[in-house]
Image (cartoon, rainbow, N blue to C red; front, side):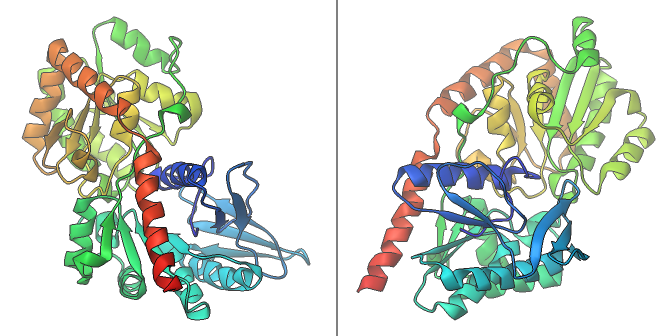
Length: 398
């Protein structure tokens, strides 16, 4: 398994999905060795975790929440810094060195940062099947635009060379076909899920004291939790927020996360005249992360292009209903949410106002989502992945 992150050193949902999928695969008698691009000291009992180390490197350290910079400490004491692209190249060559002493039947690689390494393994071990797991493509991350041509080249080349591609939704499968011309029968859809046992229930002592006091005085809280990037559609959410605040002045928007759009979004909130109604918390973990859901009356995920989107499921665990863009894969597995086109600011505002005004609507959505969550687990998704493994191993045996 080639992956770019695992909790607690994750910047988003990719690491969570990898961790929970691997945990369930291990219960299905799959022996896993997970290779990360940094020095790993995770205490994980169900699989072996390795850092992609080359000769002479003592430690690889991440820098920043998004891990776009890596510090290499060598045995002789000297240091080097690598950006995301050179790190992907280093990872490729480190994996090539590591597999010389490893025995394995399948290579399963997650997203473009590991795809070069997967192709390198395919060149070295020609009989080993390569499965690429696509959690997002470059046009998603670029907010529907073309994006970085280097990343697109890596994605296209890897997908053409892969034995099978796993897409996290039908939405993503269709985009892969449209963007890269990959045959549809080469792509299998395996939806992400949620492991409710891994989530810690909230407690009455919410970390957001200021918001708790506001709610005692009749305020409502609308939240968004995620990376502050063009993909997530947060500029549209702020434009909708201006309309909501005009109708319901006692509304606060809680924006939880970090990313390159932070200062742009702060400036936009000021330009729209709603700075007093918008709180930016920065990146959060643990209790602060949990309580950002628990304090909310509504969770909004207005993504421009969201291959899946775990956060509405996490919000549901904390009894919070969701408004989700129609351009999101998670809507394929849940129906008890409100949806809106990411660009339709007026309709987004109307639906936010409807939930904040009508407790009956909020409770109906919350109760229905709770029932849907009860039926979800990673067991089915892991079962589908194992079937793909077995199909390729059967072909190899024949």
